[in-house]
Image (tube, rainbow, N blue to C red):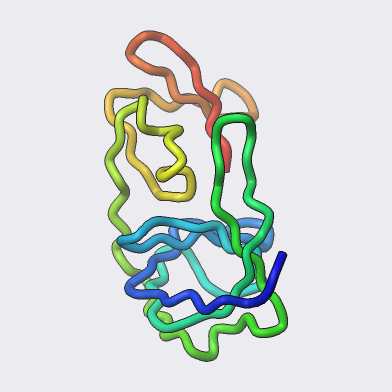
Length: 134
């Protein structure tokens, strides 16, 4: 979806990886990177990587900012430090689905997480069940 852009990583941490995607978070926010980059959860990244804007994941209410790899994407200009200590952003249940928090590692207070079957759910203090996704 366009040409490559340089993304500067300053103590950015990998807060999750899955099926060819990686969630990267720093002090300015978080982004889903859909590229074949060899990083692990809790790696700390410093340097620059070239990506292009991807098709943001969204539903009617929520947007997950997404970047995609292209021919210029590599980790050649990135220093990777393993085993960083990523601290989650503490949020209330009301802030959980705010767009700014969509790709972040979060900790939700005053809830219970259950797995009655195949999926995980948060049960709020009011008894409401919210399905979690990766």
